[in-house]
Image (tube, rainbow, N blue to C red; front, side, top):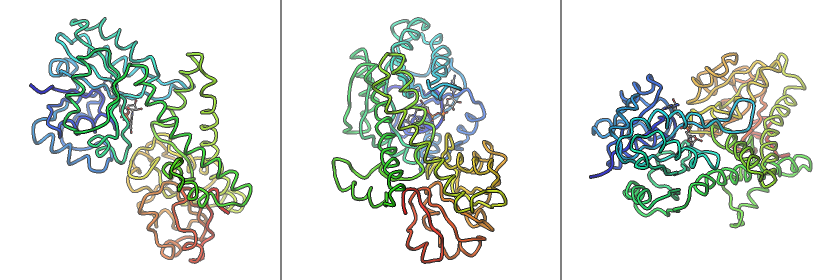
Length: 437
Ligand code: NAD
């Protein structure tokens, strides 16, 4: 009989995992403590923006294979395999990750586990968390050792979450028994041939931290080169193109610009540093401090460039901001560089109007003091300076003549190096970009 799955924590990761697993043919029960979210999901309404996910959710509901609940008792009775997809945000005032949501979930689930099952952590956690949670699980579950833990870090990218879940480039599982390995091999079998790394808990946990540290480093590397280009009147866009032809380097994650944000990379590299410190290996990761610092400096540099174009001060200056999401094709505004820049300019006296194709509702809730527009043209109307901060395709496709018709002055800072500088300059725009002359 195929396994019945539960997915605990239905956020960006959990909803995707639950809907895709149902699509693969499993019976899935999603659980969250947010009753409103569960009500919306059960009604087929996606509480997040993720391209292609809503039809998968609806198919699951219509097939009867996907349901949602707020009851841990029901989840425990239903599931053979329980996936933990809880958030692990940065703790307030420190670098470490707050893993308490995982602890609460295990404490809520375990007392109802009266038959053998596998609990599978998918959240990104500091190394050592899985071993600690495994002990807690066995201690609290009436079935004792019959409730086993495995760790299966998730690598999906927002904006490509469905594709990444259905066609992962690798699956990593940390297990302590052949039984756990067999169950996870069975669960992922419908995905077909996917490289699988079977390892222990700490290695599985570290793979995710290491992957994010590498990606963050690559982005900050090219942004550090942008700083040197700015100082030497060189062009980082051409520099990155020339580097990308070297297949030892590769062009991905090598786009100079405003840097990374979101609910993963920034907090994950900080949590990684904090954990290494606890383990006495802090020296190994001191370079990540610099990676983080370079990333934050790009935001400050963006504000400086905008102020320069505004004539030295934002007072009396109208600024049109294109983009609020931390990256295109997402409504996620967690640690969004775009909103960070917009808010800073607002604090420095600028009259800021923001437009984003999808993330406006989230942005409005987080930054109610900023003004919001219903289109790019609307945001740019009367602007002394326009800032492109999230590289949505709709912004890349903007007609410089049409936009030029609504602004007060044709000045634009391209924070993502996404526009064709020549096209904009020949339409009479004063075009500036990070890392370019
Ligand atoms: P999220 O904040 O969107 O979702 C977490 C969900 O857990 C929320 O819906 C919340 O209501 C729910 N929750 C909180 N406490 C709960 C409890 N006690 N019981 C049940 N549900 C509870 O977070 P996310 O972005 O989905 O990330 C989840 C984890 O996955 C994090 O560790 C993250 O680093 C990792 N991850 C995320 C992504 C991504 O692209 N978002 C990719 C890979 C890994």
